[in-house]
Length: 359
Image (cartoon, rainbow, N blue to C red):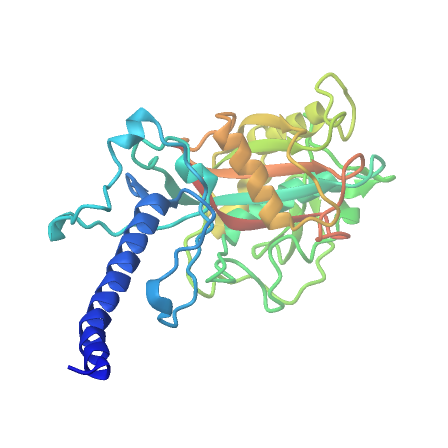
């Protein structure tokens, strides 16, 4: 046998062996990489280090990375780890969701906390001046407009509006119901926003007079949406440190605002004119809470930030989620010491919101 034939025969043997060795090395490397970088903890798919998951042999796939929160491996979680070095039975392969939300990993050994999201009603009023009564008018206006036009992001209007799409207080002039710059009050000192009455063809505050309507025609419930006939109002006084001194008295203080609104709805004939729209009562305040810790950024989104304020009160178990009637969360803000919303210079609004009921 010549030297050329000998080399050729050895090459035929060595080449297949070399390929087999390369394949085995790659498979071992792949197995070690997978078993050291991926674990399953209950129903959370979590990557335990920052190295990307790479497919072997340069198959043309890009590196795959995840940005989930890291979890410590404890004795409790070790029992829940899937050993990826052993083949799993087909029926035991779960489908997991990867999430970077730290709240979903508060207890790695327990199942996810159960929560319930519901729709709720919210009214909003800004106190922008100590010298005006706008916060009283805004708070009462937005409350009764939320009851007579409980619109949603999908249905608007959802209740009583006029031809100009105004709600029942929008086209009423409050100055008609004032004397020398101060509101006309009921015997108990209460006062609130005037509203339009189809029966009177003008704006009214029952027993205190009528007038000041600048709108177009009567009000109609074109979509025949049910109104809110009765309401329990929970007030959240929102501000910054130093806002809403509970011992202060006089106009534009927490005590005076709360007392005035409650006396208006429970101690006067104020809502009698709303019966033509389906609001029969009762309407009453069921409590209040002061929040001076939730941030109040400049020109904040009034719906989103107010929803946070309400949710924070609920999470702290300071605001109710159940009552005898529909709850309206009335958020009154200190825009003097704090900041104004993106609604300014308007001073109030109302909306449907989504809140989460803690487990």
